[in-house]
Image (tube, each protein chain N blue to C red):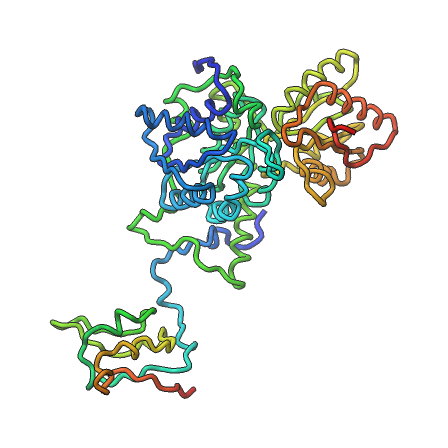
Length: 391
Length: 102
């Protein structure tokens, strides 16, 4: 399959991916660093390259509400946000998942206020990790594009019917030009397919009620039904990714395994920082240190069994969180990875790094690898460590 | 993993049967009940328009619609119908709220 090599920012690449799905409706409200994605999309609509109906709403709460209304009506729908914008939609984000609406959203990761910070960290996405959405993470523009194309197939699959958010790092990926290959429009649309809704309010032949009052006698069963969908979602993610790989030559799984085969020391992390980590891993590999990286792609559903399998038998594991769970034990990646490792006789410790866009640099990765070596040699590390902070 | 027997039955809490609220009886919530005095009724349909539920029975088989009475399965005894009945102004209301004996 001929795929053009282009230079685009992450935001532009995702705008193209969403356009290729020919969505019926987009709800748009700006927030740095997502704004340019919707700007690009608005350009497509203005130029007649897309027939998407764009609803310019008055807040992110409205954006998600409009998306829910549109998807419930039976339209293929998307939106995009970051940080406080995502926080503002929090109430409706749960509703989108509970109503089983396959809305796709670009979440351009930015730190939550306070204080006001426009730069990258994962606190926004992590704040909504229990809301019922599927969370995919992307390292670069290529992955942002690929995840965005696949998101429709995953969300709309009849075994799933859950909203999907495609995460990519604010400014680092959203704004920097990167090289990537994109599918031709026809091929992308063929892969994504025509939208088939499970239910639609506009289907007047089959009138329904959406979102009724649900009291103590039935709410729990509805939630039980929703809980059952996530294991199926994991399988669908695998299957769709396999099909996408066959089409494009780029294969994805629950995580990218970088130099993992014989790794004694493993780093588990999300997002663009993995790119930085890989460079330092290469350096240490040349010195004979057997270090590897598991770059998680799916955070929800969390690939518990997959991680347990990949981390078994290692000498030392650490996780890197670009967010903190205040009052918890470190960050979400740590807590969930350690949970997956329950029963394994493998030491694991964690780092919190890069909050508010604090640069994640090569020396920080070197520190992590040195620490892993110390743990493998029998030393103990504190459970939660801060990386890259002024002492 | 399935936690309940039939996931499909409960997905999204969507109610796929249109208008099934008619099957849900709310009549046992009443304290007062409207007594219908057919002789006073001018069949203006005000009670039907104002009823917040669907508790007014109308016969539409003839030339003009006729008020037939109260649908007890749904009447919650709110009294709005009796409040708006026009003949009440002349002291001959077709709907009078009385304490229901249970």
